[in-house]
Amino acid sequence: MARVVVDVMLKPEILDPQGQAVQRALPRLGFEGISDVRQGKRFELEVDGPVDEAALARIHDLAESFLANTVIEDFVVKVEDPAEVAEAAK
Image 1 (cartoon, rainbow, N blue to C red):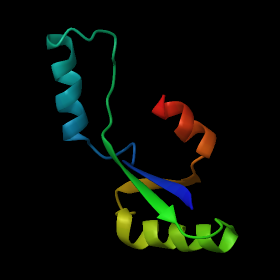
Image 2 (image 1 turned 180 degrees about the vertical axis):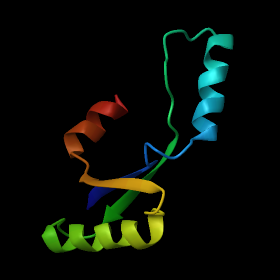
Image 3 (image 1 turned 135 degrees about the vertical axis):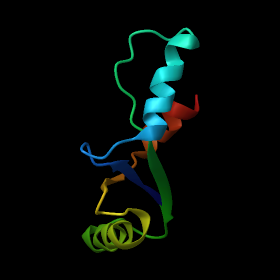
Image 4 (image 1 turned 45 degrees about the vertical axis):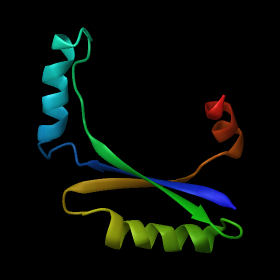
């Protein structure tokens, strides 16, 4: 089983009120030096079988038609490396 990640972010020209609210709150919480915050969504899909070009194409179609509003959002589809997952779990 493999994990495919779809990261969805607002396009740069779209205002991000949630990101702006976080950015304004950071100095009050003692976090200085952050000049911008953009908020997004992350989807982790567990895929049965191999993640080949056909599987990635289906996931791309899924992201484009269901996970992201492509009028205002961009998305990236990537296969997560199992070694990175194991390292992050430490």
